[in-house]
Length: 240
Image (cartoon, rainbow, N blue to C red):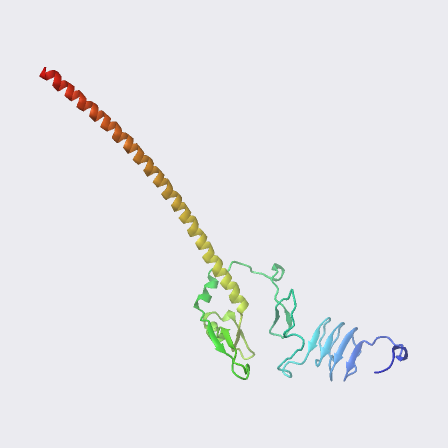
């Protein structure tokens, strides 16, 4: 350190940039920490505090069981656009949940499966002080309660105990229930329009019938009057 570029040795870039262990396998790899990357056998890997594996293009930070808490600066409070929600799988791998049909199979309509959420009981709560010293008011579900309704909506810990709720799944189920209700409303609106049309047609028919009755009544009255005049004339003749 502190040397100018002109005084640096003119040697090729090493296979590994290493602190704590001498490894030469692979190309364009970085290893930091004692024994870091010692089992790596690939290219373009970054192993920090991890022995690595047989693969390429992988970043590994820390060792399962050795580190149990992670803090990363420069994220909280930093505004970005076009973000995607990052998830973590059971192996600790980070990634984006895929929605493309390219990654899915056995696709079918949710239908009545979403009705399970109607049995869920939303609650408000505060986390224990060791998690949230401020005791901020929270809203959500209790994983143990959700597991009783539908175990597939819960993520378990290493001991198989309910740990968290798959809220994205619940949101999708809510959407399905909303669409089902929306279709029902649309059907009811169509039925109401049809009924209104039928009622309008019946009213029009009734009005026409009333007109016809008035015409018939007027005709009958005219005939009756004419008959009465005929009878009166006949009586006059008979009297004469």
